[in-house]
Image (tube, rainbow, N blue to C red; front, side, top):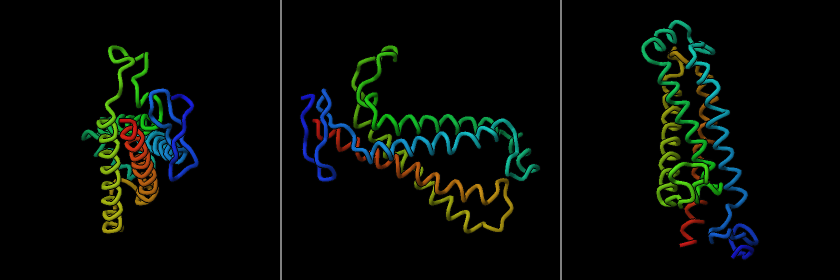
Length: 183
């Protein structure tokens, strides 16, 4: 079944991979890459600067106190989680989201549990979108409150988190549709 095609309401035809699972539609691939970029290029650089103790666009006094109380390690953990979320988004549209690559010790060549990967995509997307809504409400409610971080950083972060969460949701929906159709 390497060159077969199935009709799809959104496109004229969908190519079927050798394992019987449809290739992801272009919109899902774009959404996954946008999500991965928001997670890595959008989130990690500024948070890495802060994790290094550099008070860029923050109240320096409050930042130093927060950083000394454990803010640095917390930011490194967030950067790691954001990177994993970027990998998750890409795994929903790349072949290694179906079969573990050969270079992974002990797991090489095994099928990725599709339900678990889709569930993870949906869960992370839901958490990101809930956090985004909470951050937006908190920002509006506390607009005049002088916190550690500039309110304008939050205004940058909210659209970025929306791209991250919605892109991940779109990729997870596509992945679930493609993998459940193959069963």
